[in-house]
Length: 267
Image (cartoon, rainbow, N blue to C red; front, side, top):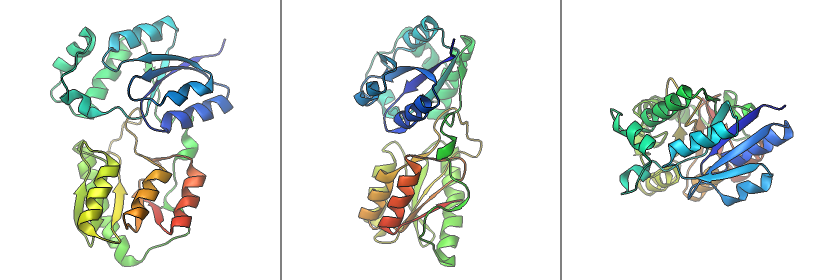
């Protein structure tokens, strides 16, 4: 009998990339799709799919046990701003949140992972079946940059790492060694748009993982949509972290960067 793997799927395209890869590798996947987050098109892959609320941790664990799943993977985003709304959690979720010292994403995810571990459920890294989407160090497309831009990047990367380590966000916008915008709860796209309004043309977007990134959750992700937005907003290019960033539809995304005349550099 094949080993079953549970996918807890949030929003965005990353769960789709995983399911494409898992299908090619003939993995048996059970999907736990999050209501109001996961794209409904996820059912097209033909795997058994449960629709669950992120507020019902006890129900999710119960279904995982019912399906005799020993390993799960978290992929896709879940809006952290849900915690700011007046919504009702199940008792287990409420109990877990009440014990936390703060409500940062990393704090919450560590507590959830610990709860799964108590139930003998192992969490796989977000890169499982997706190793081919991780970039090596260096230029990923044809467009290159000069030494002045490299100094900008080296300056910005150190700050982006500090912001990520504080669990504020993963993205910053810089120009002329000035931090123009920092991502918070609004997300990457809004950070880029806000930064572009302040910086004008030829800004740089840098996306970084935490220094001790737990690969089981919140691994930085970019794709064609990110590049298109940078181009439309007047940016010069995008910097990501080598081996710690997932590039959706990687080959096509790099081709898109070339077409848009943007540099993509893995630091």
